[in-house]
Length: 528
Image (cartoon, rainbow, N blue to C red; front, side):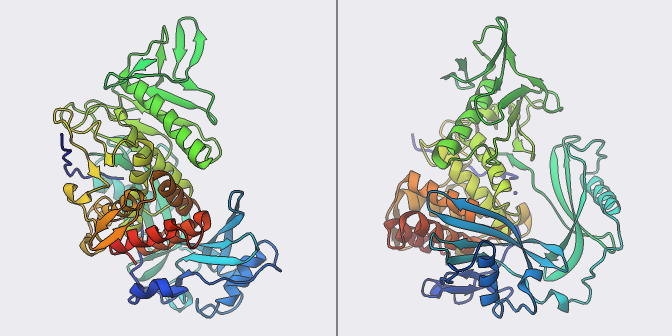
């Protein structure tokens, strides 16, 4: 039966930069400039740094390009090294740095700098906002204290949802940043409000540190709206803990710091009650699926990418099923996975979809790596990365959510990476959504990168461009490497292209078919 895909709006979670006007010439240029800032957003020329040690390679490279970034004075006053990771497989060392202004981080403005086995810098990706000192309104010290900013955010949230929030899952705090929004720079507090009642939400607020005004806000809750026996009647084997001969619990101690699966028993409290069974023949299908699929997702990342849980440090994977009554959602709330049972019409229990589980847990991986901001193009990349790895882990097709969506209509799915347009999503950059809804089109515009990933893996012709497929495994390696080493919170589609090219170059060689196919795939979807 031919699959049909219906559009369902999802609420999964970036600032954006625009394309360089001469981006069509990008392949022949070693430096690509941001149209927004007129500073480099990609540098692909090699900087000889073998005589420099450690972070001095970063500082030497930035000093070399100091004029391009329009930096006066010591570059160390404008950047801070956040992280240094050496990849044993490729002998590449990847530095993640943060733009700073007067000792305060600039929100979302991180950069990655990459050093090869010879000790030379090979690439720079990221955006740098220059000339912040020219903004007379940008003060260096806040008039408001952090707790006042938190109160302002809570007040606005309760006005937004027209309900009072009695309890937050994580204590709200105000973190001071320089925040750039709609061409203005502010001294601002970032406040995250994570709550379950009266309805689940994970709102990000930016509060002016001088006036208390709300500069920007958005809900970044990653959710899907669109031997034991699983929901679909399939038999699964999975690791549990034997407490006694008549008590087995849904606790796996063999992976990382553990995998635990709970039941909310149709209530709205988390995590609920640890799943249990008296004879180890589990019949709660939703719990079986959530537990087994969390294990499968953990195993994929460990076996394919040597990643130990979503934080690469063995973080415990916690899931809760039977959340609420007829709840048509599943979401990652920054702490754990939550699955509703569906209403039987729009959704069956959402843990029944391996791709759904993999999609949501990949949001956690993204949060711990590139941390793509959940608005605009970076938000669309956030969604797309989760779709891509959902399809890599549940690898029998290129559909998302087909096992849980509209159970009464065989063949339905939420989205298609093969043909995003079936669900009303664009498959070419020229058709992108540019309005304010859906956090700037994070679900809609994910189709552009999804189509590129499909073409890269399977090959095909699109908009007059023919792409040679390189298979799922190599495609997954490229996107994982790009996510963990090259992408930044503010990365846009153009940055995604460059990150994929650089990743393919490191993994397979500059003259490889993989590099050529990456270029062709992004040509085919209109991304330069």
